[in-house]
Length: 199
Image (cartoon, rainbow, N blue to C red; front, top):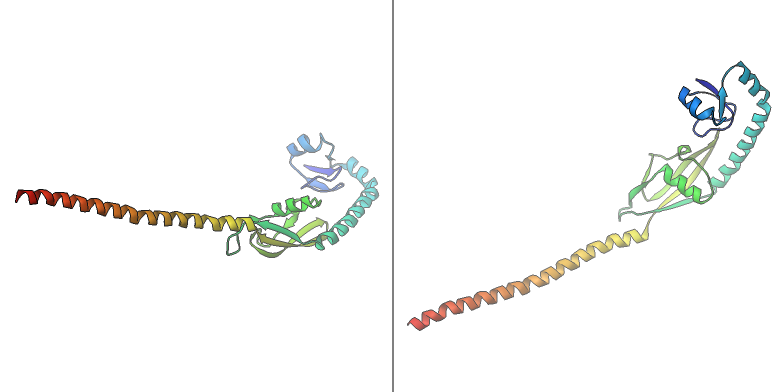
């Protein structure tokens, strides 16, 4: 079913765009919220009369996207993640991770607009993320993935605890074996005593 969008709809399109959508999606979501209207000669004529107004809004969006591109490319996004001694991350940096980090800095970028080489970053290092902002405006965001210092300390502390336990067990073993030997010696003496009395 063809519809004309009354306003920008996330993941679908912008005001004035003609889109082919499922009937249920149009009737149950787009039409009740006045986000779109059916595409026919009447609505096409109506949007044609609003073309200049829509183009002005798009020009503002292009200008905003250009300003946003400059801000993002001047920024270096640092993400700290738990990692092993070889630099491999215990998790992975995804487009959602970058979207969340940018949101903390006041940038609203949908994860679908963020492209990563290889889809995810799985080790510490320097990377570039591609952000599709608006139409042809694309920003290249430098991303630095660093290892989390606390995570390294806890990982190193675990083997130390284990080795300490092993030492305690090793120290306890000689004592136990010495006691066992002493008991065996006493039994041997007891066994010999009756033999002497019989003679």
